[in-house]
Length: 353
Ligand code: NAD
Ligand code: TYD
Image (tube, rainbow, N blue to C red; front, side):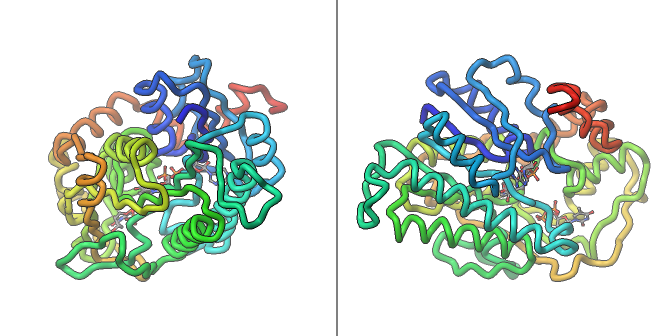
């Protein structure tokens, strides 16, 4: 893992991953971040690595096949870490087509480029030989498995049963990654992670949204009865899991990544309010999300046992640190909420960029 293509690196998890890799892996020679800078991409998230000579930012679309091929030609990557996606369930209910286009076709564009550039005999359709050490990592989600009842956990062999256009598009992408592994022998991995929290998360997702509203004494919109369960993982623990798979994972395998920290949405909101010293009177129950999955929980024993990974943050301590980060960075939140962060690219790269 010396020359990485990271897609979607201006988003929440991608930007945390880029910071984590450049800080902790001195043997990385080059890291190219390909990001379209949709509403979810924010270059401010990458200010800490801006001066790192190994880091290159390219604004572009993963669905732009010519661009993706040109990047492979120019930089000879040995590793792809694919984060770029439309990632919000509520938006997917409004605009499912965009999710299929970005999440499914975007993934296929990257898979084609990786296969064609990494094959040692690209003209030979029967050859399954690839340059040594190359790997394509698909960053997926536990949501592809669908919803669970009050007990049990999804394992890597559980059937995929997605319920939202978002999770269906991610499941479609996973199936393509699997197929490229099976049909072409491409060295692939898929990780399926539970809900992340931490710095730089866009305030449309539960934790930063509730935090922001609470700080402004605005109502906290809890869907339905608020007893839906998610398994929360600190984003840094997710980044460590991705590195473990890249460096020690068995190619062709799927690895679940879970925090072992199941909480109801109401528990999260109450904990946030108590950490902020705000009243629970701010909680407002609003109509439920259509098709709302009741519970997600994955079994990550395979990742723990085979690759020696374990989360380092307890949920309570991780949430406290996250709250502290948002409180210490009011400018970041303000620029995101006001939309000013969208002007950041022009400011950084000039008006014609
Ligand atoms: P995010 O929405 O914060 O970031 C997505 C990034 O992708 C943005 O920077 C956006 O500009 C970029 N992007 C979107 N369309 C693009 C395109 N066509 N070409 C290039 N770039 C494009 O998402 P996130 O929360 O950081 O999630 C990253 C990945 O991890 C996603 O694939 C998501 O499915 C997966 N995941 C997220 C979670 C979670 O809790 N957030 C959990 C498990 C898995
Ligand atoms: P979210 O952060 O959107 O992640 P996901 O839907 O991918 O799990 O939502 C987490 C949980 O919080 C989910 O059960 C929906 C709920 N939720 C609310 O109750 N109110 C809100 O305003 C949001 C954004 C989410």
